[in-house]
Amino acid sequence: MQKNHILLTGERGVGKSTLIQRLLKEADMPVYGFVTKREAADAAGFHPIYIHPAGQPKEARCHTEENLAGMCDRKTHTVHLAAFDGLGVRYLEAAQPDGILVMDELGFMEAEAERFKRAVFRALDGEFPVLAAVKAREDVPFLNDILHHREATVYTVTPENREAIYTELLPLLRIWKTHCV
Image 1 (tube, helix red, strand yellow):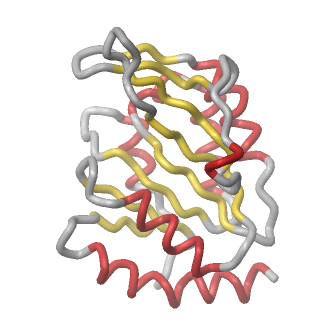
Image 2 (tube, helix red, strand yellow; image 1 turned 180 degrees about the vertical axis):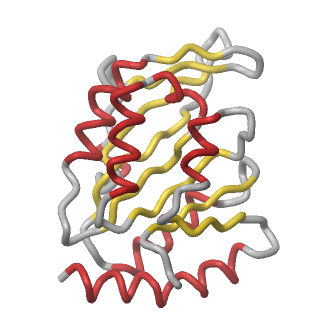
């Protein structure tokens, strides 16, 4: 039996976000939710990570204190919980029944953002279809709970199976579209 939500997991750089973008392009439905984007490192070697509305074109994205989700380098990270508990919650709660709710990517940084976590689980417990990328981190209970959600089908993406997953999911998105309009 097909479940309501699709979760993509896998190692960093295998193409989870790219796969989501390809699927959304083919789905031709309104997009709600969020995307996080890691930007180039600053002079100290830290990469800022920003949260944006999922349906927003890349050229319209801005970088402000409000949407700065955190900073990281290879060994440490700083999380700005207010970005997740504020904007992140707002982006999730703005979802409408005519579209797809995207969460790209769910990771360890938001594991302490309590309002955000509650909004994620409300979405997974809800009726709107969810398409999400979930960081592969077994040591983070929040992520494990998402990956084991009763309404989610999990796909582990690799460079070898990425195209096959895309082909498998396209018909499901067409079904979602017929149920959402």
